[in-house]
Image (cartoon, rainbow, N blue to C red; front, side, top):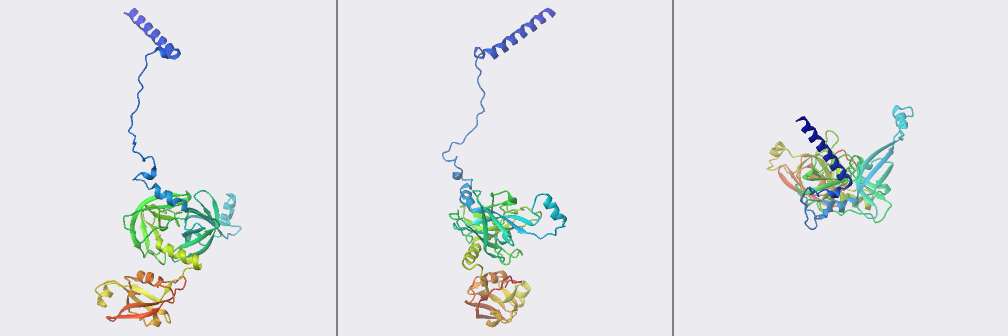
Length: 379
């Protein structure tokens, strides 16, 4: 038995050795083996290789709008004592201790070089550098700014720039698809997707004039001044602010409607500043208790708490305690509504105010004045 095992082992060894030699030197002598291929399903529908044609893609909208969105880098001089530890540390690290830099975004709104952005992106900057989508760097100057809406207009010396197409923020609906394009955290052009979460957001304490589009499209630091576009690639808002507990996006972002941005843009380009109407009153919301005391069946309107002496409202005969119901035929529901209605009327224009005073309806004419800059209280 032992001898048979030895013979078997030797025979097997010789066979395997011969097989190795043949496989190495003369593989064609061996029978062909059928190759095993993994079979996958490939969509061969015509046109699906083009991203713009995919029904689940917003590539066409992004391709249309993205060239119009720019990255903005600003720097300003910072006065530090020469013996400051921070001054020495920054000099050791190779940084200019006298310069502070920040990042933001902007939107090209004119082929001749006008760019719309947030005022807080460029406020107090000594130098503003704009990076186009093709990588070209340009120095920008501030044409004018409007801190009350946190908007600013820049100008670069260039021609034939890819200007964005303006859409309509007035036709937006809650649930509409929107995309935010900007420069978050300095990463460069980035696109995020979401929906319109709410419209007409105000009372946030961000700006004097608030009528924000709320969206859950991710907006982060650096996105400020960038574009909020619709599914067709049209500009519907300027990304302005986020609600955040940790500095990053929490799904609550705010954009200034393009209707507001367009009005500010046109006035700044034409006049270098924004001019608004003003009547000189202090307002308060109509609470349920006050509505009951005034025998109102509605909470629409705003109570006039105070009237500025010799202001437009005072000259028109408005009294503290009056309830303002409409201006120039536009009904107002709260103090913010009054603010928006009055500031939309050109200074020097005649308007009619509908009031309720001691249960009596009044309608009196008023000549709209010019709103002073940076009023402590919106009026």
